[in-house]
Length: 459
Image (cartoon, rainbow, N blue to C red; front, side, top):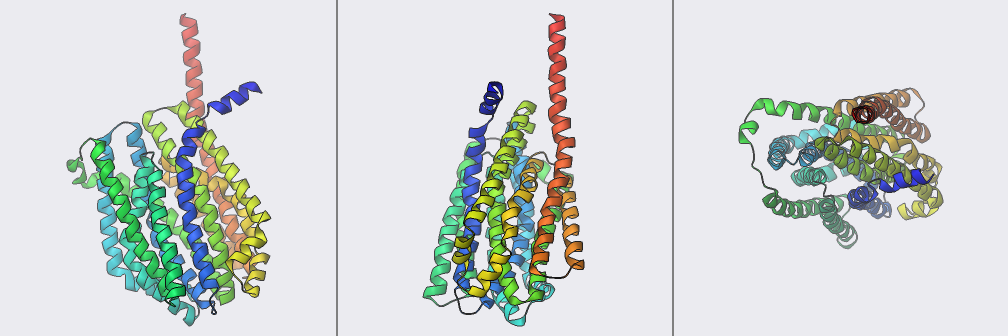
């Protein structure tokens, strides 16, 4: 027993918490802002404002999370180069991703109007809700450059083992966003347009802050950009292959949420509003779990870049245990504070009753999804983007088939949505045990044992 306790004490708890807690606090601001927005709009007389923002948010999320592959990919290659002590490679990768991001941003701005109409047509909501979503999206579109670069640079700093910059950036941005949203809605009598405008302003303030931090870190980094590589088309092939896998993963995860909103909109506007509240809580779950995923991502890439397999084993055990603890804590919070949370979200009795009836799914989801979130971080650091993609494909098609063939009720929709994460967790665990734990960790232990035996024999 004492030997086990000593081993647990020797694990890198301090280093992991140092990376995880800023991400946890930063990520909490995103769902908390969503909860405030839902609460602000939920207290207006007409639920179409809340439903419209929910619909618009699910579509704008395709950009934010869909293009999050830039942040994930940059974080993975940066942490590996950082572990290998190669500042020139770090700068080259950063420039490479900035070039790709700028190209994608230009294309999105050029095509944003037809893309908005395509998205709204797909959602097939009521005309009133669709119009509110259109207002929201037309304003939010102009925040796309700041939104993408902000996310990508937070990924860069995560790879550099510095998650505090992300916390500071997000804190500044979200506090301003929160204040602007409340003031614009209640002081200037705006609704959907006020929420969108406040968000865009805060996004540009946030990206300005992180650019200043980047310039300071860039000067101290050393090394030089390899322009010859950047001008070589072949250099982009591995990056684009990884990005394509992560893009498919992100797209299908987002499409799962959009599909849930679509099914809700087909039932009625009230169900769509209820699921907007539940999805805000789901975002709270995913962003909290992302803290340990980010720590696992940064440390896994660092250990593999340095070729330190013993360190990798310690990181996997530490981050896995913390992820499990977070999931249990979240479930307990949702169980014990159920009524308090519901009353904070809305004062409409009908909505409160429907949210309460479906709250069980929010209570069990942290436990069903814990492995999916944690192993995503591990796989990013290990550059196993293809396996991440395959797990999401399996989970999404399970959700799509189940929800398509069973009666469309709020309970059935949420049941099939939760099963998506159970499938992902199971799939990733199988790959983790065979490709990472067995191949990298256990084989390293066997190699060390053989070397020790050889040394004893030689002695």
